[in-house]
Image (cartoon, rainbow, N blue to C red; front, side, top):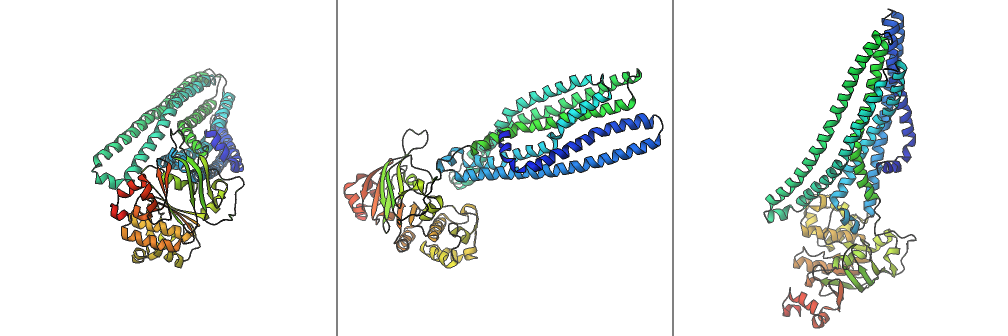
Length: 577
């Protein structure tokens, strides 16, 4: 998976990679040439007392060293730029893919896991790529070149390499095989810690209200201890790597010195050749150590690449149309024909055979018990997920055939849980319509009954909004979310229990103002509060995913027991009448 992922994203940087390889090649050849020059200085300069030869060859060594340094700097520069660019591209690809996901895929992965995959996992891949460019490209050149140069110095002594290199390779292979499952478990543990931490930060009020601080500390401690245990296990395996490698290196150095001394004593080898051979041996073993260092990181990067590719290979269940409709002739007409929705693998459908018609100038309400599928029904219209059966038509066209930008302009959704983005009040209100004027923003705020509290803010429309709108109350966030949709001026308004955090007086004023603002639009309201929807032109009653009644408030009170039960759970018989 790692090779596949990098191959897909390295295409635009072929020239940089080629330049990097050439620079690494020159740098490595220069490094391999230096021990030979050093041996010549010892054999023909120091031993024979030829100072001129020492100075001349020393100058060549300085020039070669400078060339090596320049090429190394250039290689690191190209390697760093390419690795950072590839990391940026992978993050962008994951982000773009997540943006295409429907609610189904988002629920499948979960927000904490997607955040980890976009940040931590991509960072691991980026780090391995950088180390590959700076270390691994040079390692095989150094290893093969070092063996050739060592053979050139002394063939009999080079027989030690036949033992040393395979032993070192076997040790590295064994440790890498142990590291791979450990790194997979490590990433999963990081996901778990992120998930619990996110839950605790988001639900801090609930935790304190139920005095569950100790329980949550225990949950986090268990997840944290699990991550620590896996990290320690991984660290222990990694800790074995360098001692084992250094043991082989030191034993090899002693063996070369021992056998080399006997070769020199027997006249079969010069002192300079032994010095050069030791240098080449160190270069060979260092190249193996560089590869070893990379092998320690590759298993984790492979696991991270698998997790990233899993996101990239997951197709959204909401597929853009191949021949999108870009113009809608009708205005604000919404219809569901025998619409069904079932989650993958679920035993039963959430929605079954929903028939619904909502027209311009009318308010259609949907009510039902918790879990009856009200929110799911609204989600089908803007294609948060697609119906698994039947059709959802906007202005007479199936929503699956409408261009996404056209559908977004036509349908405005105020979600059940209003979310505000970091920025200002104005930037949030202009989220769907960047060209809206300040006057239009204030008009939308007035309709949404939010003008009074925004005017009291120190900076008015430029007042800061924290992440998620956490510096506003639930009712204020709902009203700002409604104003944001009003600024957009869609043909179809979808309100998903968007008045639940409002008091009755504010709710009544808001609905009255909305009636004037949306007089020519189609309004579809999902609500739990009967007082919010009792004046609707048409009320649809859902029960266990099916429509069990349609009519006005008085009609349903007369002949629909499900609706009547809901109403009488909130109002007295006299109030309901």
